Every structure is written in structure tokens, then in C-alpha cells.
Image (cartoon, rainbow, N blue to C red; front, side, top):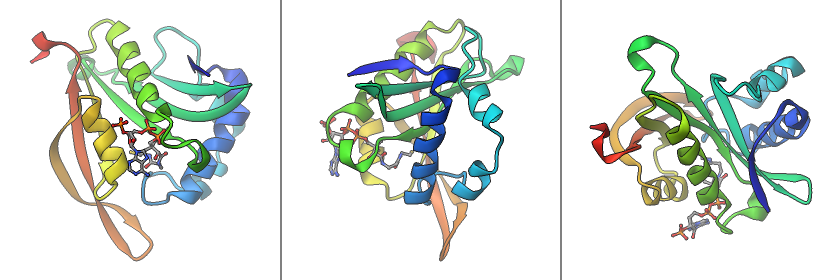
Length: 173
Ligand SMILES: CC(C)(COP(=O)(O)OP(=O)(O)OC[C@H]1O[C@@H](n2cnc3c(N)ncnc32)[C@H](O)[C@@H]1OP(=O)(O)O)[C@@H](O)C(=O)NCCC(=O)NCCS
């Protein structure tokens, strides 16, 4: 098993995995399967841009050439917010859960964030009530700092999002 930064050549597998994620866990992701399936293939390739200073990067678990889990990181470009990165699009398919892949993906993302000049913290949001995901983030060092009410409109109503953050170094705050 290998965790690596995905490249444009992985776009087809990445697209398929994320469309599965949006369809099977509509309350976990703000994007919907319908919206994302309508995007051109170039959008998915662009998200896997290999540039060292790319605005977003995606890490994937590859097992025998098969993509078994993903997590993304995006970076702020505005001068006053360049110290912040956001973890997004974390998904491990049901058959691969509980094997530590999620934890390894978060670790890979945090390690990469530390390597980017000037980045001091990583933030994320997790749907309130997603106990496994929230506990996983907490074990990886994320701390909740607020709950956003009515963060997403989903079938049957609205759900809130817990906002979490992790400082990348002790001297960051
Ligand atoms: C959240 C998710 C990525 C976790 O992936 P995973 O590969 O199963 O995570 P891990 O195997 O690293 O497990 C992390 C921890 O959760 C625990 N865990 C995993 N599945 C669990 C379950 N069903 N019930 C209770 N605990 C569970 C593990 O024991 C592990 O604990 P530990 O670190 O103390 O050993 C995965 O469940 C998922 O994709 N869920 C649907 C999409 C989603 O919610 N994404 C997050 C959006 S914010």
C-alpha cells in the first residue's frame, strides 16, 4: 500500500471515487454527485495539478494500482490568509474502512502542509454527528472551534458543520 500525491494520470480513478463518495454520503460532502459529474474531465485533471505551488493537492492510497482512499488540501492565495490550508474531500470506501487508511491520509496531508512555506495551520469542516470522522480528526490533533448551523441543505432539512483546526507547529499560535 502506497500513499502518494495524485497526478493528472489518476484523474479518472479520482473522479470515480469522489462521485461514489458524493452519492453514498450526501450529508458528508457539500458538493453533490450531480454537480460534480457535470464538470468537464479537465476540472478533475486540474485538481491534480503537479505544480509544487499548486493551490490544491490530493493524496491517494494506491493498492495494486487501485485507488482506495483520498484526501485533499487546498491553500489560500490571498496575502493575509496564506498561512491557512484546508483539508477537504476525505473518503475511504466502505470495504477498506477501519484499516487505518483515513488516519494515514490525514498524516500525509499534515506532513505535506508542513512542507509548504508559510503554512501554519490546517482547518476542516465535518458534518455534526459524523462520529467516526470527527474522532479521527481529533486523534490526528484537530480541535473543534465552532459549529456552523444550517451549513448544508440536505434531503429532509439542514445539517450543521463542526469547524476544526490544527496548528502545524507549537510556535504557530
Ligand atoms: C471517515 C473515513 C474517511 C475514515 O476512514 P478509515 O480509513 O476507516 O479510517 P481509519 O481506519 O484510519 O480509522 C480511524 C479511526 O476510526 C476508527 N473507526 C473506523 N471505522 C470505525 C467505525 N465504523 N466505528 C467506530 N470506529 C471506527 C478506527 O478504529 C480508528 O481509530 P484509531 O485511530 O483509534 O485506531 C471513512 O469512514 C469515510 O470515508 N467515511 C465516509 C465519508 C466521510 O465521512 N468523510 C469525511 C468527510 S469530513
